[in-house]
Structure formats: structure tokens, C-alpha cells
Image (cartoon, rainbow, N blue to C red; front, side):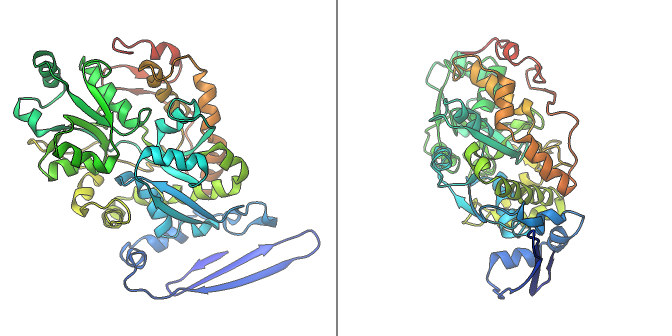
Amino acid sequence: LEVALPRLRLMIMVHLPKDETNLILTTETTADNAHSRRDFLKQSVTAAGAGLLGGGMMSLSSSAWAAGSDKPEKTEVKVGFIPLTDCAPIVVASVLGFDKKYGIKITPSKEASWAGVRDKLNNGELDAAHVLYGLIYGVQLGIGGPAKDMAVLMTLNQNGQAITLSNQLKEQGVVDGRSLKRMIDSNKREYTFAQTFPTGTHAMWLYYWLAAYGIDPMNDVKTIVVPPPQMVANMRVGNMDGYCVGEPWGARAISDGIGFTTATTQEIWPNHPEKVLGCTKAFVTQYPNTARAMLMAVLEASRYIDDVKNRPAVAKLIADKSYVNAPEQVIEQRFLGNYDNGIGRKWKDANPMQFYRNGEVSFPYLSDGMWFLTQHKRWGLLKKEVDYLAVAKSINQIDMYKEAATQLGVPLPSSPMRSSKLIDGKVWDGSNPKAYASSFAIKA
């Protein structure tokens, strides 16, 4: 049993071997550090104490391990992240101490690129990561780097990415997909668009959006890979006409006066899957209790972030140079769902970046993972047909997620499949992925 007080932390752990009972009592005092951002967040975020203790969120088995059977095999985990707004659950789980409730310490590790995240997951330098959904699936099949069995523990967020076009295009009359199509058809030159990883989410959103307006992303334009934090700098020096990336780098282009938002990714697919808590399958096999503890800590953090009253303080936290390293105001507005496209339109988005939404966001739907495979096949990244459902069942750790969610009182969906209509009117429900992948007029 664990009780957290402002200046005293009392933990009682009961271990019951077969032949004896030991009661272990430990006390731990916390030093007062007025300059610590962690302490600042604990003091300024009003619901933190309630989040750690209340709401029936902590079960007996998650904090006092019966006979040690649920005790994490590894108590310190290094979790990679890229400087993006949607890294928030990893940072919050660590800074606000959700990890300690489950007997682990999450150390966030700021990474430079998605390729770096991939390599460090594969070689064990990272235990897990805030990572692109499509990256995990690409690595599993050997089309996004060396093949390795991978695992998705939960979905970290939905929505919240954007396609940005340069102000130079705007000056030539391009403001949306239709006018971009007219420009490409009438003014023949090399148009360059950037995404963040070949099999990743941003590549798939960019390709899907272009194709929805009759632009072939494999032939009509050139696409390049640029790490998220470098997007704005590359557009500033004229290296690209547009890019797709996560926030705050869409809003930052507007703030810096170099580009505008032509589309949000939630316009392409409302409530689309985005980042996941991912790791190798070997990590789950070797450290199942650690993986579950990490999942529970991040799931609680996700629930905490989705309470709108907590978001301003979370925006302040992740704006720090240790995390996203961007102006707080650039992060906060779209984090709160307040959008300005930079060319005269302002709105409250119906489908902003979300992290929990009563468990609907967090569940690792099989159909979500399968969709990325259909797009990998559509664009020629995946050369052969695969058993879409079998691959998704192997990667998405639904049983472990259900165990964690049940202990936290998080609602579970009635089915691991869900249905959605995308920008081109096509409906995706996972029922016939092979037919879906081949149904597009524009494809490789």
C-alpha cells in the first residue's frame, strides 16, 4: 500500500513466501527543490495528487505484489521520444510520478530521428519508445529497416498532425489540395514534400492526402525524409514545398511566417491512430511485468492529460528544452484544439489531439495496425501480400492491454476492429484488407 503526502512518502510492501510472512516498511523523504520543474509541476497541476491516489486507479496487485508474482523484472526503463507534442504521455508519466506507483522508473530519452529510435529499440539501447505506428509495422516486416519482431502496447494519441505548405506556394495561389493539383499540372517543375519516416504515419497521411486530390506521390512530386524538429528550418531555406509532421511543427511554421496549414490529419481520417508505446517483442517476453507496469503508468498519464484543465500545465512542461523545446504558446493552442491555419481561418477543432477519450484512444485496435499495412502495400513498400490480421495480432498486445485497463478501470471496446470513413469517402473496417489495398485508383 502506498500513501503519498506532500513531504513524506510511506510505502508498505507485503511479501508472502510459502513458509513465512515478512512485513517490510520503508520510508522515503523527498528533498525540497524550489528550482525543480518536477516540483513545480506537482505544485501547479491541481489534480496531480488526486490523480496519483484517487478514482480507484490503483489496484492492490499494482502496488503490493502478491508473492512477488507481479513485481517488475526490470525497475528502470529508458523510453525514447521525439520532440513532438504527442510525446506528452511519456513525459507526464515520468515527471508526475505515475511510474513509481507501479514499481518502475521511466527515464525519457530525447532522440534525434525516427531512424535513431528504430535502431536503438532494435539494439536494446531503448527499452520502449513513443513511436510512429507505421514504423513498428514496417520493422516487423523488414521494410522499414532490419526485420525484428515488434510489439505495440497501446496507442498514445489520435489526431494532431498537419500538412504545411510554403508561403511561396500561397503567393502563387495554392491554398488547398485542388489548387495544388492545378499548379502541379500547369507549372512543370520538381515539387518536394517531406515526411518523417518511409513507413511512418506522416508519410501515409501525406501520400493519402495528395492522392485524394489526384496527385501521385510516387511520380508527380518528390518526397524526402526529414526529422520532425528540422522541418521548419528546411522549409525556411527553400528545401521543400510542403511537409507533414506532428505538432508543434505545423503551428511553428505559421508562427515563424514561413508556411500555412493546408490540412490537418484529422481531416484526412477523423480520430486516426498516430503514435504508440512500442518496443520489441523480446522485451515483452523477457520483462512482461515491466511492460505491463509501463503500460499502466503511461495509460494513467494519458487519462490525466485528456482532462482539459490539466493541458495548459502539461504544455508548459513539454515546452521545456529537455522535451519539445518550442515556445509554450505555439504548443498550447493546438494542444487545446484551437486552430488557426495561418491564412485567415480560425476554428475549434472537433477532433483535436486526444490521448484517452474514455479508453477509446488508448486501445490498440487490430484494424488500426492493419490499415498501415494496406498503405504499405498500396505504395509498393510491401511487395507481397501478407496475412494482415495475423501480423496485427502478433504485434498488438491486446491481452496485456486488457489486463492493464481492467486494473485501472478503463473501459474496453466491444471489438478489436473499428470502422472509419476517410477523406476520399472510402470506408475502412479491416474486414477485407487485401481488397482495400488494391482498390485505389492511384497506387504504386
